[in-house]
Image 1 (cartoon, rainbow, N blue to C red):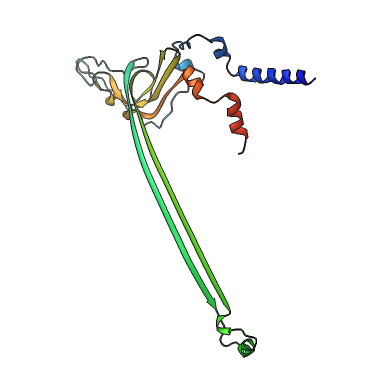
Image 2 (image 1 turned 45 degrees about the horizontal axis):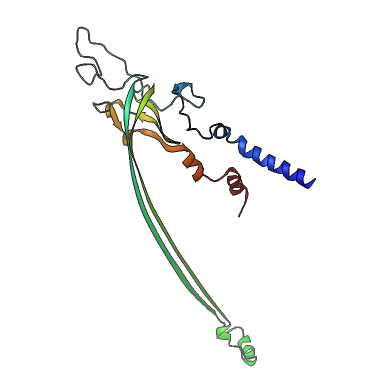
Amino acid sequence: MRMSRLLLITAAALATAACGAPDRLRNIGRAPALSAVENPQAQPGYRPVSMPMPEPQPISHNPNSLWRNGSRAFFRDQRAQRVGDILTIKVKITDQATVQNTTTRSRNNTENFGAPNLFGLENAARVRGMDPSNLVTLNGQMGNEGRGAINRSEQLVTNVAAVVTQILPNGNLVLEGKQEIRVNFEVRELIVAGIVRPEDIESDNTIDSAKIAQARIGYGGRGQITDVQQPRYGQQVMDVLLPW
């Protein structure tokens, strides 16, 4: 009976660990597969962006004119301006933060209470050996000291091509780009999304990541190296449930 229970517990543990990673079990000894190129608007979590918009302006046309209203060049503009166009995002994130805080607080309190004259009762107190001018003495002392320090440095420099998925009523472009690179048995993923102004796009059809509003930039990976760096599923469950 004990052996049967032990086998059942072991099988249940193995099944629990395996149901969270069926793909990894099927791909043992093989490199992770790259994701297929997909339409961002067809993704389950895709939602059109809704932002406060100004009042629409009427479009006027100049007959018999070679110049287009709103054009930024005499010839056709090669920069991204329609849904489905592609432009390059130059991702450059260099963040450094150093914060040091020191707090010191102290306080001393001394309170004396006496009654030199109290309806003649002070004489009776002197007979009993009490000093009516110094009946109660209170002393208090408090001290508090705190120190804190933060030192953070992050850097990410790369380029990624993004697709225009939506044009807002004021002309701003909604972008979304995803890049996957496989090196041996590790896949590195870079995801960039946000809103840009057409005026901020350079003449070579590139834009800096600092000019992206509502920017969402994610950089990570999956594969054998990432699996080794992550705790096992059982350890993650215990870290969530255990209060100490």
